[in-house]
Image (cartoon, rainbow, N blue to C red; front, side, top):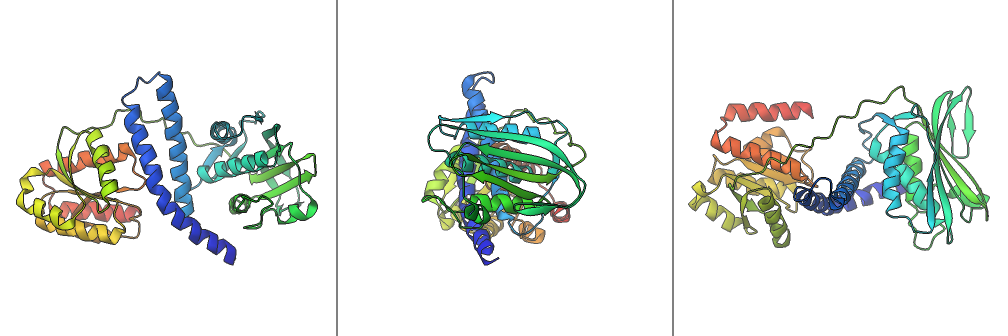
Length: 392
């Protein structure tokens, strides 16, 4: 239990830093996509990069939620999950490793969180590839099983019911029985460069989804890791992707504040690409002076990438006091813990989380500019944030 608590604390800290990296990947990818013909190879490559970035963003959200047990679950198609995992793996597995995907029944569905379960498949496949010396094969298959009585697996038990078995096999060096018994322990690894967290995470996710793991292995022959997960009834229809163009600005001037000068330049590039004219400040006093002396120059205020959300709210409140009619867009790593009344008092009209997605930023900025053109009364802003807090 102490080890898993350590993992949670360590992973949460790392995840906050990765948010900024993923945000840059998604932001620049989306900006590049709008400049390329939709049917070009470069556009298709960028689409794969964006999808991978979105999956990474979902995974980071799961890491930050580690231990809270408030994961949003839905019915998922196992063949679809395997296909998406395969697209990630083919770009990262060594060339001498052949990835084989066996056909799975369309009825193979599970209820769970997509990013977590997809990470189970990816981790098992990467672990399998690392167990192969030279050329070899990693195979993924999924099938349905009806369990009529309690069944014991190598690492867990299954109650009677219908299950989907997702198995990853390899032609690697295999494992001895003592190693198999410890393979899912946090920080246990047989590789010099390993950290012992990949398989520990796999077992934790499978267990949280009501399943169990079964491992077979023989030295010099290979291994087979099988994740048994309860089968769900049906897959929810996946909404069609929104292919509408980004709602770009028309050259409106934005006061941009970021106390990190290097990131400030990147934020200015992002806002410029979205059709705005950013005026950046890394010094709070300079930003306040400009806001007071030339308030009519700006259409909205953007406060982003500060060391803490509390610091962001402090500068936002000061800017709001200097220019109470200017809407403020706050970009922060996490705002779930902030009361709606605090955001309203600081003059914040819109909130965008990190990592920043260009479409979300563009939409929020459009609403901010609209609020500048039609000043929103205090009572209406209060009702807006009360509704946001109720949705939480």
